[in-house]
Image 1: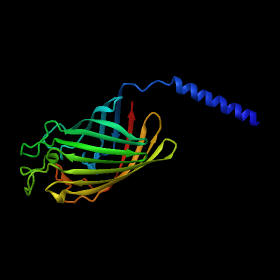
Image 2: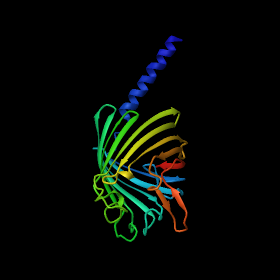
Image 3: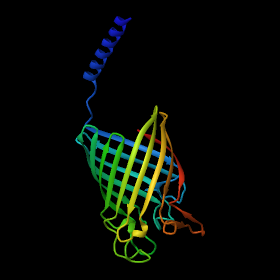
Image 4: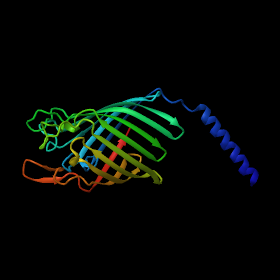
Length: 258
């Protein structure tokens, strides 16, 4: 029996060695796409769709050197992004590299674009640009985003109480992801949004989510919430209905990467 076990072990080792030698090298160029249907689109804990469903998708390009580019899109609510196409288009690019085993760093730029959308009758646009710095070690990741533009159009022209521009706003994003079962992950998130010169818009957000890869798609369920000021983060529609877009809620999603 020991000889049989030893023989099996040797054959297994040889098989792994041959596989390692014949494994395809990492491609120089990689293209991927993704699509998601969700019961709500929460950005940093705040609903962007007036707590209505969202259809989302994007494409990514990565070079073996670590450089990457991408685009991601989602419908958004016209109640929150006035006069526009009800669409958010994100464009990003950056450089990801390994600092040491199991630890990677990421530096990039991200631009949020809302076609034709303007804040009320001010003519100011919601478009927002950020630079981000991120690091990931095994199951933990951290990211800080720094605003290069006014925070989604918030400035003297759009604020109820003008206090200057909001350039330099920041967001800290902390995440821990664990595999709790086969093809099943648990994600814990905590975030902090700072809005420069407009501190009453500051808030903390959190998310607890579980996702399972079923092969044909990944199904996720998350509880998302914030401590955002209920008055500042309440949105009204044209029919007099209002919704607190930052309170706690559940988000169901089905996504596929290809």
